[in-house]
Length: 99
Image (tube, rainbow, N blue to C red; front, side, top):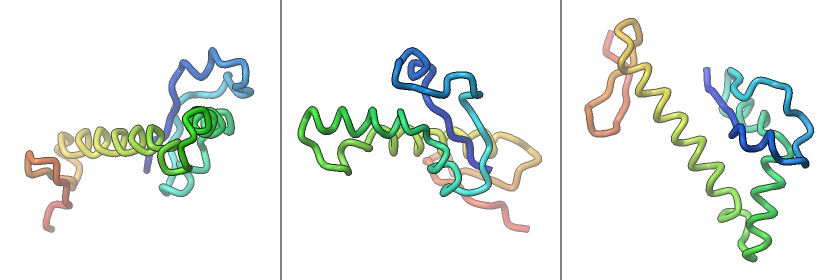
C-alpha cells in the first residue's frame, strides 16, 4: 500500500474544494496514489510554475519530491518493523529479505 497526502496548508487555500477529507489515504498502486492528488494541489503547482515560466517538469518537482520522501519514509518504517520483509543496508537502499 502507498500513502499519499497533501499538506494541511491546502485547507487554508480558498481554491481547495475538498477540505473535509482525511489528508492521508491508502492506495494499492502508485497510479492510484497519483490520481488521488486533489485538483487544487495540481493546479497550485502548475500556477507556481507558470508564474516563473517553468515547464511541466519543474512545476511538479515539489510534488514528485514529496511523493518520493513519503515513499522513503514508509520504506524506513517497514524496514524497522520486525514483521516486515523489507530490509535496508543503512545507505538508503531497500530490498526484500531472502526467504
